[in-house]
Each structure stands twice: as C-alpha cells, then as structure tokens.
Amino acid sequence: MFVKAHNPLLLAVLCAAVLLLAASVSADGLRGIRSHQAPDYTRLVLDTQAPVRYELFTLDNPSRVVVDLFDVTAVRGFDTDVLSSNRDVKNIRGHARGNGYRVVLDMNRTLTPKHFTLAPVAPYGHRLVVDLVDATAKPARPPQAPKQNRDVLVAIDAGHGGEDPGAIGQGKVYEKQVVLSIAREIERLIDAAPGFDAFLVRTGDYYIALPDRTRIAREQRADLFVSIHADAFKSSEVTGASVYTLSNSGATSEQARWLADRENASDLIGGVGSVSLDDKDPLLAKVLWELSMDASQASSLAAAESVADELSKVTKLHKRRIEQAGFVVLKSPDMPSILVETGYLSNPSEARRLSQREHQRKVAKAISAGIQAYLKAEPPTGTLLANRSSSEPRRYRIEPGDTLSEIAMRYGVSTRALRSANSLANDRLRIGQVLVIPTS
Ligand SMILES: [Zn+2]
Image (cartoon, rainbow, N blue to C red):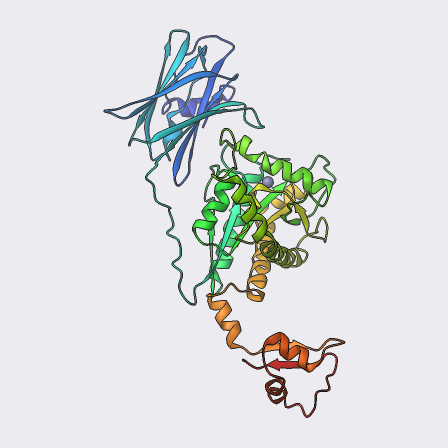
C-alpha cells in the first residue's frame, strides 16, 4: 500500500502503524514501495518519479539487501505494511545518503537479488524492481508421476499479474484480476470432473514471464495449456470472446496480430528485464519445433473449436472462426495450447459484465465444458479417459463412397470380423448406417 497524502482520512488511519521516512524537496523521488509474493520469489517494487540510477549489493550476518538510489532526495514515504504478506523481508529501512537515498531490506533468509528498471505503464510509473529468488527452491506442486489411468491434466494460465495489469476497463476493471477469478473457477470445475485434474499457473497477484508459463505447465506434464485473457482493442466498439491458437506464419487478422503484439509485450511490462527466448541451441530448437508443430497445431485447433462452441452459448463471439496469431505464451509445440480472450475491457458494457461474478462463472463454465469435451474426444494415452473410451466399442457412420473393405483396412480389422460384428449378410452399406468396429 502506498500512503496517499491527498486522502487525509486514510493517512490518519495509517499514521499509527506506518513509518514515514524523511522527506526533502527534489524533482526526483521515491514515491513508494510495493511487494508481490510469488510462490518461488518475492518482488519488491520501488516506484520512482523518474528513471533512477542505482546500485545494489548484499550484506551478511544478518542478511541484508542494500539499494542505493542516486540523485533521489525526495521521499514521499513508504509503508512497512507492504511486508504483511511477505515471507522473506523482515523490515524496510531508509535514510538520506549524500546526494541520494539508501534503502535497506532486512531479510528473513538469504536470497539472490535480481534487479532491473521498468518504464511506465498505466497505472504504474517508473519502477525499480528487486526480485529475491530462492535458487534452491523446488516446484510448489510435484509433477504427476506417469502412471496408468492417470487424470488428464489441464494448465490454466491467468494472463498478466503483478506489475503487468493487462488491459484496464472503465471503472478500474483490471484484466489481471478478472482473468484470475475466471481461471480459479475453471480450475474448480475441471477438478470436480472425474478423470480430470487442473492447476493454476499463476495463483496470485504476481508476474510470471511468458516462457516460464509454458515451462511450468510442461514441468507438471500438462496435457493442455489454456491461457485466459480479457483484453482491449484500440476501438471501444469491438466486443465478443475469441479463441486463438498459435500461428507460425503470421496472424489471420489485423486484430489477432495487434493482440499478439500486446500480449508479447507483457514481458517488458511485467518485468523480466531483457527478454530472451533463445534456447542454448536455437537452430536445433527451431528444427524440433517445426517438426512437432503440425500435430500439436491440429490438436490446439480442435481444443479451440470445442471451447469456442461452448463459449458461443453464453457470450457473443467476436468471430466464429478460430484466429491464429504468434503468441509467445502459446509457443509450446509439445503441448496443445490455446488462448481465450473472454471479451474486450475496452468496451464499457463488456468490461462491466466481465467484472461481475455471475458472468465470470458463466464464462468459466463454458470454457471448462469446452476443455472437457475436447479431452474426452481426444484423450491423451495412458489416461483414465483414454482407457475408458477404448473399452467402449468404436463406431463408424457410413458416408457416401465408403466400402466395407476400405473401412476394415482403415481400422486394421478383417472384413469378415466387420461383417460378423454387425451381422451383415453382404457387403452392401447404407449412408448413415452405423457400424460397430470390433477390436482387432
Ligand atoms: Zn491479456
């Protein structure tokens, strides 16, 4: 929380608990400190009036992180309340030092600081970000062990978070909040279905870099990756939900390209400093990527169709066709991935609806139904869903031009077995007739 001097009531309430630090007059100043707690790191954000020159170092016994801000003399005060949900930082202190200001973080444990500055993005201004990372941390959720009859696992990724608010609609509707509550509801619904398991990639108000989102899902061995958004467009007229898949070869519409650019900029907004998606061996990665692209793109499209079908029952679709665009967050060729735009916060009435709990539930229910329908139709091998559907007899509906021998060949069974399983006296077929396919 930041102490707003123009709100005397709030200030009065906070004064008792709050440490106000010395202030002098200068154009450049430290305006406040905020904290985000992610499962595997702590982020402290120093809001500054202008881009800041700084130096950062650590001290031991007791463990401290020291940030020297140069040419910063005006300190509007900060609030140690920001540490109330912080596991790692015990206290924040500060004092003027020469031409600048020194901030000292007293640590509960020794962590590795990573630091960088961020340019303004509404509602935030210039920021210096200090991430305190536990390099020895294990994943919060142990990956599912490969076993027979396992649950199908769905990764639900609520877009943006922390320093990246995403789109902001009228009435201060923040995309990062809307999508997290929709994602939570989807997770709950999928978890409740037998044979299904879901987990949230982002569980709170903190930022995760785009490549890390799919990495987390892959580490958990997710069968499907679903990224949830509620974005904005330059025109407030635009409304409706859309479902996207990744395209390697350019976006299918100007809007898809525009959105992809926006989402991809998220890393610069949310803060991973300089963004590098390069693997150790970019050439090899590219070859592997293109080899596996086709299969996963077909599955992604099928998943997207299924989700769009269900969404169309509860909300207007922006376009019926599945759009394709080059989203970084979907670049995971080994895992079918889709991105759902639940609506446009740039449209005032859609922003209002998306902020309402009831509409969020409806949207979540539709997305969850679409995901389940897709995974039931194309269950990953080794899952309970796959084993269930393989113990049921397969069926085939006759289409014009079908012959018995060709169907037998397609399913790898003999024409005789096909004939006897369906009590056929001869090889004549009727269009629309349903054949039971015997197990070979
Ligand atoms: Zn978004």
